[in-house]
Image 1 (cartoon, chains in turn purple, cyan):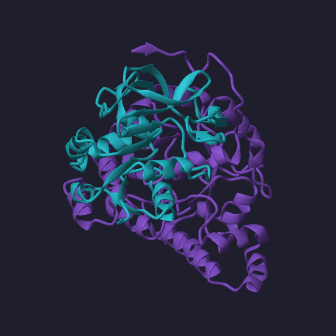
Image 2 (image 1 turned 180 degrees about the horizontal axis):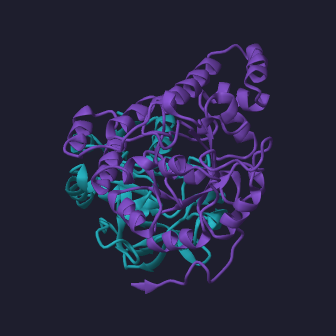
Image 3 (image 1 turned 90 degrees about the vertical axis):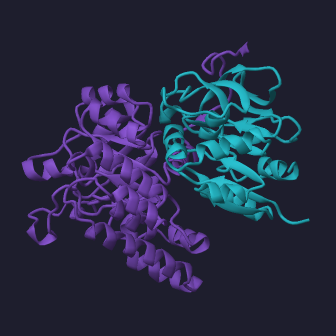
Amino acid sequence: MTEMTSPEAASAARSTGTPLVKRGLAEMLKGGVIMDVVTPEQAKIAEDAGAVSVMALERVPSDIRRDGGVARMTDPEAIRSIQAAVSIPVMAKARIGHFAEAQVLAALGVDYIDESEVLTPADEAHHIDKWAFAVPFVCGATNLGEALRRISEGACMIRSKGEAGTGNVVEAVRHLRSIVGDVKKIAGADPVELFDWAKRLQAPLPLVQEIAAAAALPVPLFCAGGIATPADASLVMQLGAQSVFVGSGIFKSEAPARMAAAIVEAVANYRDPEIVLKVSTGLGPAMKGLEMAALDTKLAERGW
Amino acid sequence: MVAPTVGVLALQGAFAAHAAIFERLGARAVEVRTPGELAAADALVIPGGESTTISMLLERSGLLEPVRDRLRGGLPVLGTCAGMILLASEVLDGRPDQHCFGVVDIGVRRNAYGTQVDSFEASIAVEGLGAPFPAVFIRAPAVEQVGPGVEVLAVADAGPVLCRSGAATAAAFHPELSGDDRLHARFLSEL
């Protein structure tokens, strides 16, 4: 074998942080599972189970919900220890509008930033200007208008908000059906109707026209919020999600390593009930769930 | 001539983008998740994605040995990014349980350029392709060793980024993302 020089040795004309480069990573995460983790040990369990990425957190959403108080960006030291533990991409969350937290996460070299309603919002009117960053952002949305506003601010991936930390998939299903349903309606709309669509969605017209032309959202659509079982994952994939975020659902279940591997297989084979059946068998109890009517705080209502 | 059937390994990653390009070029693209679906393929694409995840799912789906057998039998294959890692003979910093098929005699290092903020676009010269090719590198692997019998078709920053060995082609970048179909068209024309 011939030894080659390292890629660092010479420098050619490279463009970093371009829209294509930023959206490209979301393409690579398709058909995969992104798992919330709070320790390097959990991150290893997630990687061993086949996660495509981990979200480095201080507390999983169900604990944030239980503990209350202000939820902020995770301690950089904790994120570093998780980055050191795994070779897959590491994401982290910044508060809505808190661009300084995002700057810190970018300096830390995280692979994706989630501007997330799970943390306490820092700005009641403005989301982060995500075009200003070389690192890509994912944002939550409950409907297509919200999704397009986030894309117009530079988000490279949209996820349904669902209702994080509940283990109840009902809100994620509502959000997905709403987004996917409106994309289909716009794809079938007359060009003159697109002006009204943009007005009703409170979204930029060029993005609405882009959807009409492509019959798809301009960036990948993933699902988050309340996924707790392999069948939940199969459900949201069949409804049009292209990947799945699982938060509390793995490490609040009885057998996290088995649950994690089962959800990975269910996402890869979401159309095959025989495989979803096989991987759903013998997992032990999933996380304890919460009814929407019992919630004091709806996280999905955060963001504008 | 009947249009060839290109199987696109669809366990995880950017498989849909490859399938759409082959369909546009007049081939039949089928998603491969089972040994039965592999059997119908005249060629295979191993897409970008997370190589550790794809490796594990190859094992759990029962596809690992069938894919290895077909590749050893000379099945034409195009691997991009994670697919390059899976076609390599050695993963220099892989997980101990990570599989690679060894049909292109190269040693690769995962995420060699750094994290996502170091991902980049670059215009590269590809042997026999004419105008430069717009290449997108996403947390890309680097080829650090090249064995005899491997043709290097493109380099960037002095490192090989497109390698061919017999019927197997491995790219460190993502030709399926940049809207230039020439590499896919060339792969089809050689079937």
